[in-house]
Length: 114
Image (cartoon, rainbow, N blue to C red; front, side, top):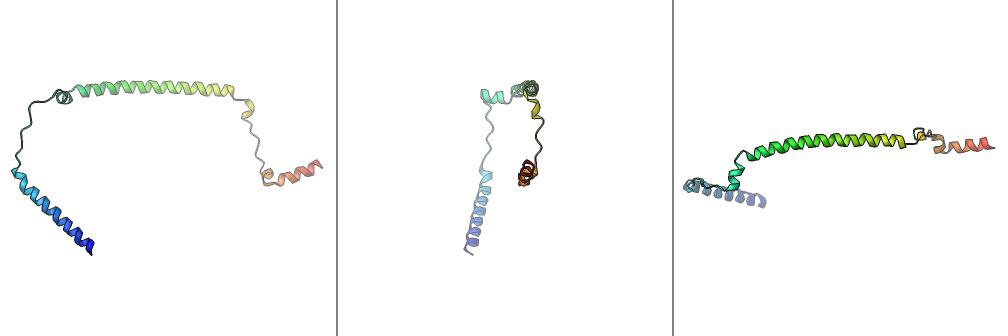
């Protein structure tokens, strides 16, 4: 119950502050923007940043495409080298004998040896 009372008091106080701010708003006069702008501000509002961005995007697009082709060529070269280096018997893996894993294969081999 105490929490509800504190919450209501907080909301009423926030509402009062908002009401006082709204009443004081018409008293604040708008100042005209200053005509004197700095070099950085003029540069930021000109077309130069857009041109630089377009040129950078074009360069980056070409560079990344060429880099991708380069990486793919390296990948193909490495895959070919691995095929030449790979031993021939690496393709022929021994079949998994589940009977041997379960222990049944040992008994049969011992019988065959005897």
